[in-house]
Length: 201
Image 1 (cartoon, rainbow, N blue to C red):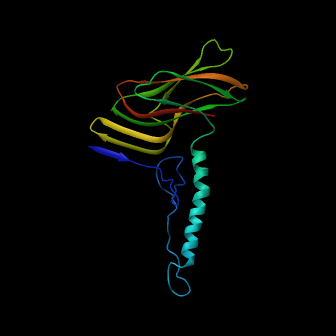
Image 2: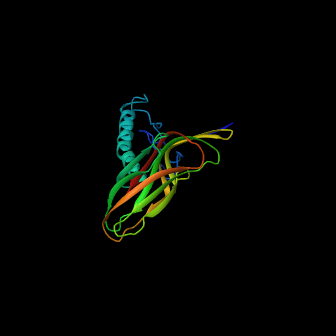
Image 3: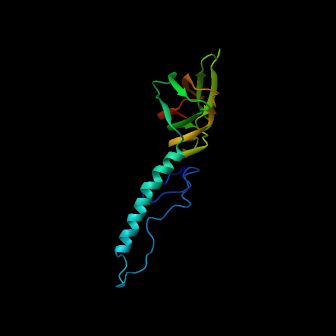
């Protein structure tokens, strides 16, 4: 039996400055530091209170910025799939000139080792005779936030709050409206507790 569990350290007042790259906590600010004694020789004076207020204020400013920079651009559409509803879902979106699409997912799955889980996207642009197909591997993203994995023999339970997949679309030469169809594709039975796909620009 083996287990690997990790989680993003984004709760104030402690936050990881490398959160966009991984779930490691290197460079995190401590939630307390040793302060010099006050003039009367008693530690924990008003300086300590001011310190904690400063850390909380810094976290309030930095954490939203980190979350925004880590989670991509503007969200356009979220598709949610369940074991009972795995069929294609369709949305109409607008992209500006030179606009691109990035694809993200949020999942909580149970599956056997060696199982593949992907999203198949068909993007139909005005004037194109055939849609453009994009295949996104859901289980090998380029970055994740708040992820965990537990493996017992060949059974894997994996989840993350948000992950950017290694696929994209664009840029487009001019502003246009397009239709996007998405469907999950799995190689073996998968226990689905959460399986969402998000389109961002």
